Image 1 (spheres, helix red, strand yellow):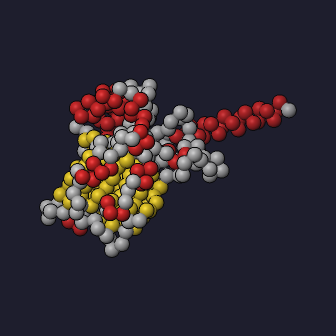
Image 2 (cartoon, one colour):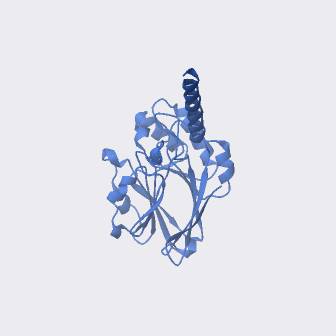
Image 3 (cartoon, helix red, strand yellow):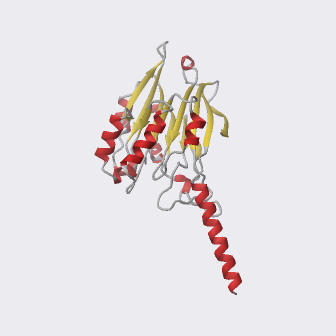
Length: 266
């Protein structure tokens, strides 16, 4: 009987260690997406997307994998949480800035700290905060790309109409929202081609493929491609199962039809 109990305890310890290792992975998923309405004059736009960092320190292997391969960096919310020192957020942002200009949207856990201090820190570091607003990119031939961001939707802080008003009507539109439930407000007439989100952690711990949320990945709603990331960090427990930690390197190009051309893990 004692040997059976010890066997179960050993299996439990091994499982916990395995889940802890999964939570510490540094995966970079590479996605190549084609859109019919993506302006040819932009050639290829490369985005590094990282969401839900929480307590983690961005590992140097991530930086090394992505360095020289991206045009802009987007932090999709939950840069930190209660108990995480502001200095860690500063260190993580400094690493990400090595890859390119950084854009940020608010997540729910970002409000657990003094968000005024976080806001001031990000601004002092040259990070562009997309809080219900948009930034416009224009090619030499005059084509436009609007990068829009909304605040956290679950607390009534997201104003998609304001972000749309700040964008250009005839531009290629990308929307960043920490929570994927923003899709409940996205309409066909908004002409948003790509949405990047996180928040769900892919369920974080999935037993027999079942979790609190769907596993991360792409899904399509009308003419909009939507990515919900499993995220880089964890909440509550530093453990994962069936929902690997992930970041994303996204390549956008013009194509004859809207589709995902290929995906791989760098």
